[in-house]
Length: 315
Image 1 (cartoon, rainbow, N blue to C red):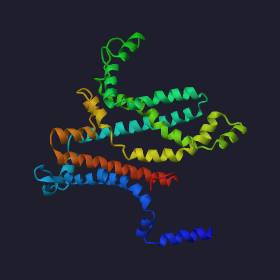
Image 2: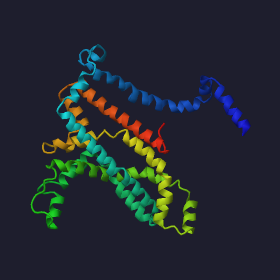
Image 3: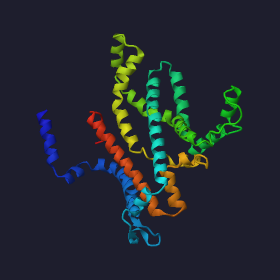
Image 4: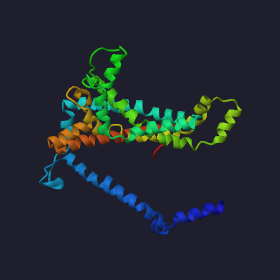
């Protein structure tokens, strides 16, 4: 042990470039991933400057005049600021509360299922919606909830719960529920895969010992399976919090109509309308940067809270 420790200490004392050269084959494998991150994640950050400039396309980013925080102040004083911030936060937290625990419950249930054929059938059924495109999902919602010819309307009429047409698609208060629960349905099975992977690493000897002690299946799930996948749950929760303000643009935009605009207008759709339709590039960049800033603060906060409670953290 002492010899191994001294060997590691001597290795650390060698110059960095020497250590890199020693492990050059491994760094070569790492190189494509690093280049990918630099090209697609760091180089585009140069565009952040647009948020602080009075950007003119014919002048370019560097030659456009500086505007400081003018566009941020304009965004905060806009009448739509409160509306889009509230809608984004409602959809984000609603999606997190509804969509985060369900894959964990599904994974625990599938892992404990005694019937392997039933388990595979449920997995296939729940995975399938993940491969359906957003456009198809929104088309299905429009067909199912059509006011006069939709399946839901016909079903409710047949069982006598309502009479006549339904106005779900034209009711602004229905939009968050449609958006969130259709998203949960689409991602439930796919999101449970990582938890199933974590559960596969649980030592079977723990379950065998618990069975000898007379533990029921539910007690084993609660006392063995769940605690052992807590680190995975915490890491995924931290990562989710880092994208909490990124309400899906495509789905929100496709589900928008004149009737639900008061609840469906979120930061991402507003950035598109301001930036692409109205060509206010600096303002849309400022709004987008504000959105990213909130995400960054959220991931820092959740990571810090996790560390305080002695759980896993990203750094």
